[in-house]
Amino acid sequence: MNSNKTPFATKVLDCFFLLRIALLAPVWTILLVGWIARDGRPLQTLWSVSAACPLGGPKCIWLALLGFSLIVAWIYVVNQIADIESDRINHKLFLLPHGYISIRLAWVLATACAASGLAISFAFDGAMTVLFVLSLALGYCYNLPPFQWKNKAWEGVLANFTGHGILTFLVGWHAGDFVAGQTAAPLVRGFLSALSPSMAIAAVFLATTIPDAEGDKLTNKKTVCIRYGAKKTAFAAALCCTAALLASPLMYHNFWVMAAPSAMSLAVFIALAVSADSRTAFHAFKWPVFLLTALVVVFVPPYGLLIFITFFGSRMYYGWRFKIEYPTFKTK
Image (cartoon, rainbow, N blue to C red):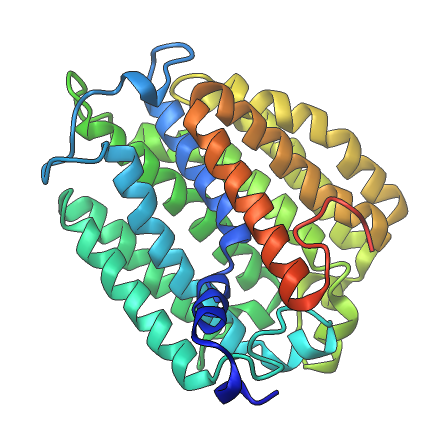
């Protein structure tokens, strides 16, 4: 495709969705779980949080969510740059593999996202900036040489456990320290509280490697599924889901937000361990995220509107631009 002939408005939309907006939703959910675990008031919603961040204006949690979303967007864009060939083979993420957006422009967008996200972290304190910088560093190690942990077995699992799990959770947790009347919670409690959602992230990530195995083999990736096979990968995912359930009582507050979806998701992961097929794997990495997101919306009603706009906005864009139904809960 000749991207030079693309209308400006279409190019802007392409750049916006290159950030993988639909995949930011699971990150938002874990970040908000961190805030919920930090806040001890039952079913407290963000509607009544009156304290503003040090810069004034937006509520702390929303500003943290915006800033961290930009950091994750950098990771997602860099991941697509690094995965052009495997994405082409797996018939997904068309924007870079099919030339709708140039590699040069993708790097410009990624750099702008990283710089903007770091700038927002300065509205908090040094600890928040450290969490943002660690996420950027982990994203670099995950995607780029000489590390490229995404192409390796347990390095990839550990990176998702740490990045999408612990660090994302701690951003939401630490944002709670800026709410009026709150005192800084012990950091060790934050790490303990992060174990359950981080194990859930590991379970979901392991499930995603099963349907992607064919394309990953052709690009010389050594994911857990390729290295150990679908059966062992599915079993490991079920173990991680079990660990998420067992670790949920360690959460500082509102442990049932993780306990309930982990318990319900365990049946799907057990089914995956038995069948180890791609169809069940799709259920294993889609429905648990949906269940957890639904419970988070109970605590944070405005988040439901954000999810609604993100889901159907993405549907409209991908349907119009590529004639595909995405995002979707349907299996391939």
